[in-house]
Length: 275
Image (tube, rainbow, N blue to C red; front, side, top):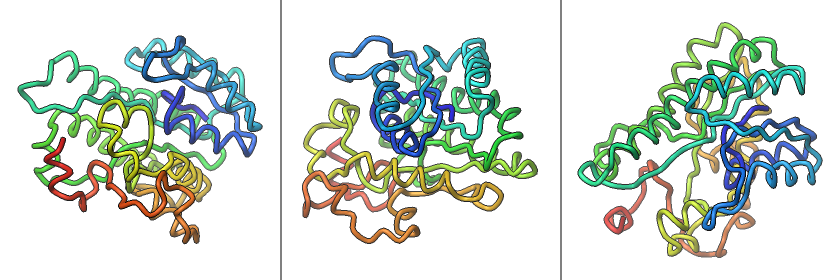
């Protein structure tokens, strides 16, 4: 498994869920030193993956640069013999309207989110063609052209939807090779350091643990790549399909009113206006 990002947050939770089944996981990320607000590095992530039973190869890689991605893929194949799964997890976020979005932030989001997803997928494809039940899984939302999401934060919305468009196109392009390409997105807000720092700690009580996203992602990756492709999944829907009925174990505050995530249609207007 090759994953962009993964040194913390939902990416690390997905990696740990896979690691519990003995997966070999390659983490491609830039974080070699802990951030004061975002703890965790590729090395601590590797330790956590290995502590639950997986094997990990942490590689310093900026997915904006083709040479670095190609070198990382070569190292992954050399270490583990091939690639079965590509997870496009790395993503940059800047929540602002158009006037208040610096172009360097716009470029960062589109270079990491859209171009990075395209680039990492592209470099994995030759190996996925020989993979075992090969999947590309992109952590991006269902496509929804309702103007409220564009009006709320145009640059971020187009960057995340760009990831979904890449995944959507790959499903059609790679079907002939039985390589699946799907997107998965949280049904509700998740309690991560990024949510606390970017959106606000007040949302935490209405959020769920990131393990719900990880469990759903793992469930998708176990499905048959020949038939499970071209989907825009929400984590709760996936787990309900798997027979899960009790979601309280994922709650941060059991009984609290859940807050829907970005790009999920039933967000109340007052929540959106608060941003």
